[in-house]
Length: 113
Image (cartoon, rainbow, N blue to C red; front, top):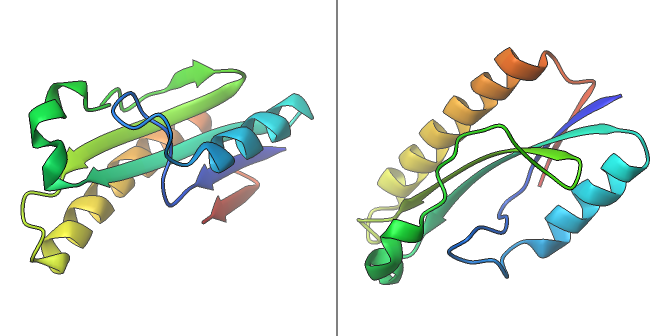
């Protein structure tokens, strides 16, 4: 079975503490024989601007503990404009999803958090 997981947040080099619950779930499912692909778009606070060189933008796939990860991070440069935030989030997620779909083929399930 092939599963795509789209978490609301996910660990990265900039914030390794974020979304560990989703990472742990993905790894457990992968250990049970499911082909797991995580597609994660994280939009970070403007407070992280000074750490922007640590932003995680491999696009993917990167295999970690049996899980294929497609990840992308960006800084929310306009925190007072939620539409701009959502547009960036959605654009990143679409890029990652279509790349994963092209690389991995259609999943049996898509699990969106």
